[in-house]
Length: 419
Image (cartoon, rainbow, N blue to C red; front, top):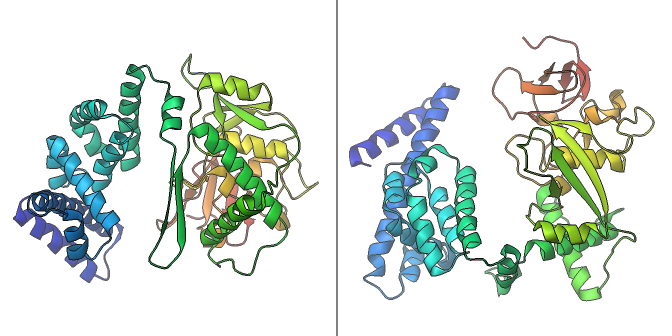
């Protein structure tokens, strides 16, 4: 990016910040300029780090000192610089603000799972995907790069699960606050089993009460409780496990292409080979949920409880798990097991415990802060909620409720026309 273009972007950003009456379009345009400016800064940092590596024996320390950052952050900068040096087309796109540092870091992460020869081939393939990177979000591009890495791994004949087991690792360290930290990586099968033990321990310890040491922030509170549950699990050996057989949910998407097959939904978003799934299913209860275009076509059990009970039953929870892998709020990646079920029309205002009146925003969202939303039917069951008035956080793109309006501040079905 030319210096004049950098100056122009800075000027536009400053003008919007100084304008107290700037509208949505102006603010979004300034954020786009800021994204491009940040990309140019990241490209400049990587270039300077690469040059510094040829002048000093420990460039990470020099970068950490000059940036007032940590050695870990400096290491990330050096890794990014190495990736950019091997992918000139991506480097050029970052310099002109067409991609972000997150796109580059996705390449770096994928390369760490490969041997040197495979990594070189991945870098060659990814550099040819610069047009994809320019039009894709960081998440979308990371998925594409992971797919390329998997193709390279499949070509060497080594089983993916075996490779993941070989990559299992754990390290501990003490941070600047004197806290002992634990960081580990496990293969998907071990991860599913550990996650289940941890969730069982969490439920056994804190189902009825939580300790006074808990933070007030909802997300930090859950992290705190999980840490306590892990400590109890390791130090006391109590499993907190539930008696009975394990349960798996198979989601069948009726709109999926022929031959794609069902997918198994676990408590964590992982992929487990079909042969291993077959072994697991032999000693488990398997439930099938059929969906199409965001609508549950079939799920076992009673899905509509009306006013007979406020709490959702296991059948409804299975159906919602098949429908939503994550929080129903668009853009929120919090997994199903970290969300809480809610009535769209609140129970105390006459809402029913029926599948079409249940949704699962992340526990940290306060429904009272959501805007008035309009529910318009797309077909006989599916409804979509759209925000009315000024742009605000949009409620789930697909929720199911009665036609009309729902005021999330009161939890009531409104009758006023938002227009």
